[in-house]
Length: 377
Image (tube, rainbow, N blue to C red; front, side, top):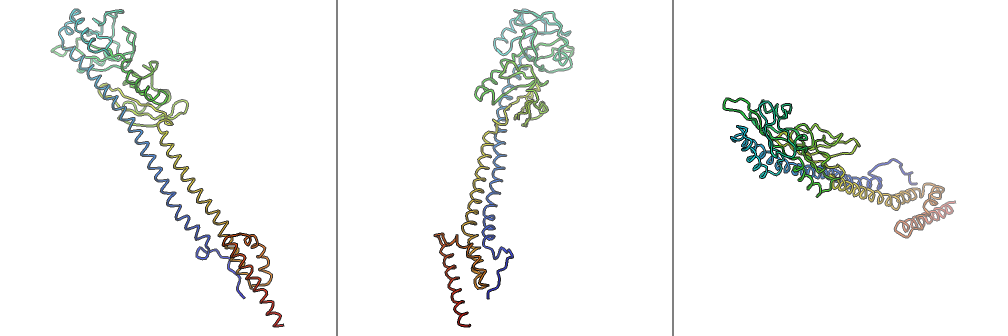
């Protein structure tokens, strides 16, 4: 008699476990490589987006820094002229008119005395602030303590009624005594023209470029209503005044924004590029989702193949193995296993042929055993 089959599971004796181990060895490294590739690719794509925003902010910062340097150079040269140092109205009118003609971004040029009193400004019309005390201005207090030109924070000029930023140069005599300041007001709307052109190319809802002064006020923006206002409410302002950086911040509505900051060294200003994270990283997330779908399809296809293989081959082989091992054990045992084997005998493939052959073999063995038993009796 043939001994009963052992039910102990062993990978060396189980074809199903061997095929499963082979499948995991094949699929596992591929899935792991896909995950690692996705992570590295996402980091590189995000770094490319941040680098593009930094490059744009640096270009705007360089252009703005050049404009401010020219404005600073202008007031430095004005402070050396005899008309300004002698407070000659006739000479200053001619001089300031030439400067205004050459510098269209300047809407006001003026002279304050040592007490902060307005002595002269150009244009002289339509309104006049001659004789008004401006010593309370922050830029005037800074000029009192400085030997070099300073740049003010953004504000609304009482003379022109427009939002401006001021470049100021202190005037001192040969002994170093303070004589007053000469200043030019830069129209903030002119600084916003470049921002508006950039926003028009990308769409205002997806891309926004602003210039902030040293106090964190917006002094150049595609939206005129945003001038002299703080950065978008809720966004992190801690990056202002620091080195070039890029970070993600939440606004009051809980939306994520990618903020890129580049300083403008000549004035302590900075350029901020704002983009919704959903728009900035749209291609990154699309790539990530595509990679996840590809991995899911690969793993799902492998799992489906394994289930079909298990149903069509491994389980039938297990039944055939149990049936073949039961032959000759006892007359009753093959009868019970034959009923489990009957669905397999109806298959038209090799498994069906093997099942029918085993059934026929079992029946032939039973007939021979019956004949032998009769002869022995």
